[in-house]
Image (cartoon, rainbow, N blue to C red; front, side, top):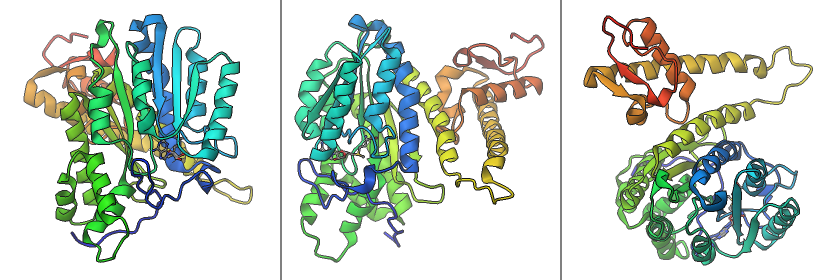
Length: 411
Ligand SMILES: C[S@@+](CC[C@H](N)C(=O)[O-])C[C@H]1O[C@@H](n2cnc3c(N)ncnc32)[C@H](O)[C@@H]1O
């Protein structure tokens, strides 16, 4: 393994139960105000959970959908900005007329828990179903899963470092819930923070000559999280940290996917565009609807993340970066549409004709998590105008049948 880049972020691994030099404890400044990376994950939660609950709750007894946040934090930042629990409770209030979002928040840190419990008490006053559970995620998992039996489940696993073990994720969460999808049985979805800093820091121990206390325990915690020692070889065979992070994340995602028989979508999360990846947010879902919805949510969230990078404007400035924000967004969209167009052309060449829903990932290759439905529509319309396809880009996008143009347009 070659030269390593600097770790500019400060997340550290958590072993189950004990922490490895954790610097984000309950007295940490982390929760004073929100970092840009959190803007992205929170916006995804905001965009995703309401449509998820609305859709899957249709088949649930009493419209009850279970939400589990296993690493909940204090609920709100000290400056009042909502953390994931406050955001989800806002979503729960939005759907309360037709769905019960039954929320379980687990937090280990004492100070964070106090603040979380206060938030949950306020939610009770609004008539929402919410539970604050103190202690380790692993300790509460079984009882929450048993409360979620028969109901759709969305689990958000957002540790600072290493989270649940591979076995807890694949066997306990997915393995104990029979997936029966749209036939009226409960869906299971997991949105997980796979921490790049943990990969860099723990991987670095493999090559470091330093006598780090607990080194074997830390390495073995990473084995437990990744489902084996395979990641060690991948780390050592990678030429630098970005490659190691990308390959180990991909290896993890593929192993989970295979073990649980799901699809997956992963997006990179950074604090700033020029920073290294802080973590990947990965959605595991056994339904195309979930993956589609995640793509839409991620794309919309990225807009807010980019907006959060804008420096505050000041009256003395003649020109503010905010002035060009919309133009830059248009330029980005133009590039995405070009990429999607070329992906569709390649699919047309390879298949002659296909349905969008059957080829989501090929259509979005290279722009997944950035572009969304409206960019697919724009690409299809351009291809229609150019006479490449008979599909005119009007109607429900996922149902579009894209065929090479013949004399009579079908749409
Ligand atoms: C990244 S923060 C969570 C942020 C929160 N999800 C949000 O978006 O607002 C991780 C939290 O997990 C807590 N934590 C660490 N290890 C834990 C464990 N084993 N079980 C439960 N909580 C844990 C930490 O105290 C911290 O508050």
